[in-house]
Amino acid sequence: MRPLLRLGLPLLVIVCPAMPQASAPALPSRETLFYNVEWRLITAGKARLSLEQSREGWQVAMQLDSVGLISKFFHVADQYSSTLNPALCTEIVQLTAYEGNRQRETKITFDLSSHKAAYVERDRLKNAVILSHEIDTPPCVHDVPGGLYLLRTLNLEPGQSRMVAVSDGKKAVMAKVEGQAREDVKTPEGLFHTIRSEAYLFNNVLYKRPAHLEIWLSDDRRRLPVQIRVRMPFTIGTITLQLEKHE
Image 1: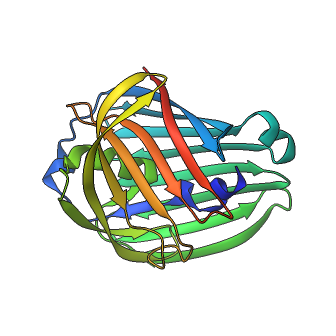
Image 2: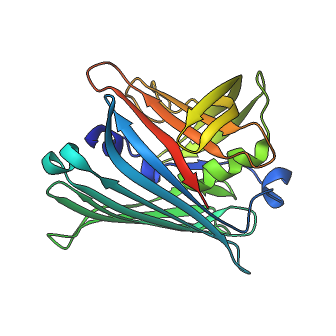
């Protein structure tokens, strides 16, 4: 479970110029997705991702908890939230992470008018700031769940790709998101016809470590994120989030 959390995925943000698809996203006004997290062929955790629309925009919340044997060795309880404007551009990201003996609190504030992002990370046990800095960003910024919802609005077909700027709040790079193939994926929720896409964030792009990030979206108007997988070297292993149910 620890490799998943130390990847920096909860703080990943995808930034790109304003796009027509994001201005009018084909997303439900309210949705909750429940995932089983598998690592090395065992259930390592549970994840819940929710979206709710308001008059001001969108509210995203994500919760990640370790379970079973993994939790006994390395307990994880992460709570994440982000506030998005109507175009899915992120305004505020907050993460409270309990990971083993570590307790961290991170806040990223995106100033869409000045194109700046302020990043502050605190050690909750020591009540001390670990890292605080500011970076430049494009006008519209998407955090990782927001980026996932953005991907659902792009309707990428196999063979199509989109270049986007990607940031984790510390640096920004250009990365490719590519539609790759149609595949059937069986989950506890049922059998889904999907389109597999890959976001090229690893291998010295945003992250130095070698890995592949793949997302399977249902091949229908809902574009449900049925499965998310991070494939890393054998010494670390593969982490898979698979949809258990959605509301």
